[in-house]
Image 1 (cartoon, rainbow, N blue to C red):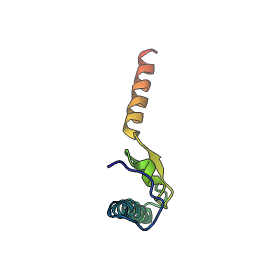
Image 2: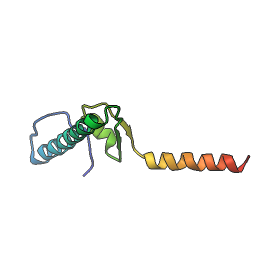
Image 3: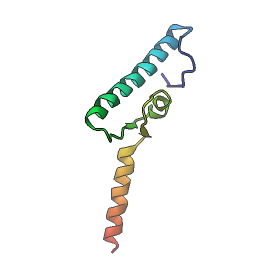
Image 4: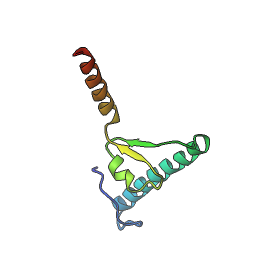
Length: 88
């Protein structure tokens, strides 16, 4: 099943209803976890990653940073840093 944006709150079919419930349920779960962690860590910056992050970003109400491949970007940065040290 390919993810796609949801533009309604009530489905007109079983599939649409399930999609709406899943997307809004996950978004509300993310918001709730951010609220809980923000209580203990007021300067918390949340990062949403993964293939569905662009879709979920539209439904999460909290301020959040989204990146699809943060591990790959970090590894690339380390590789470039190590490469620049070897050339010195």
